[in-house]
Image (cartoon, rainbow, N blue to C red; front, side, top):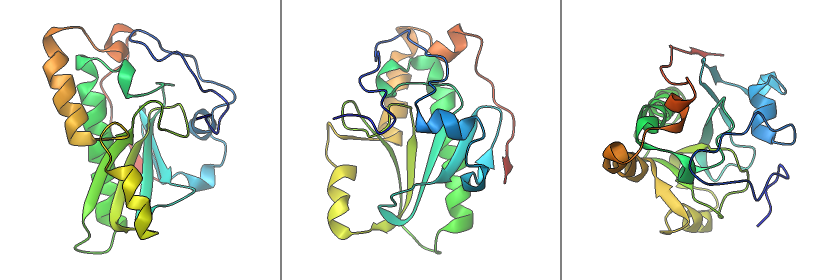
Length: 176
């Protein structure tokens, strides 16, 4: 499966952090292309509506750093993952219909269209209804809660990559 940004396959092993990829759609959005799409920006994260929504409300939260996918995250990256979900929840609280069921998660390699870590934040129902399949299948979909649990288990195994490179610690962002 090729990535829409032409960056698949990227090196997807622990320890790898690419500079912003010029052909990556999400790196372009982080860099300020299409500013009208951005609904949230902080020092570490950007959020915007999915160009191909698969739910009543479907937002994406991405880190500024070009992190290829969930496989490269280490235990200390737990804070990044938790911050991404916290931002997604706050945005859905403002944009989703009251009482909506919410879903947060990631597509896992190789089942993602863009090779830049991105959290899907959705207020259900899925639209169209059959699109639900790609947001529930094990091996294709990883819930944000399951990723956080995985990173907690790795806490003793190795440090997070963002912390190794001087990243980490986010400041409050602003809705745009």
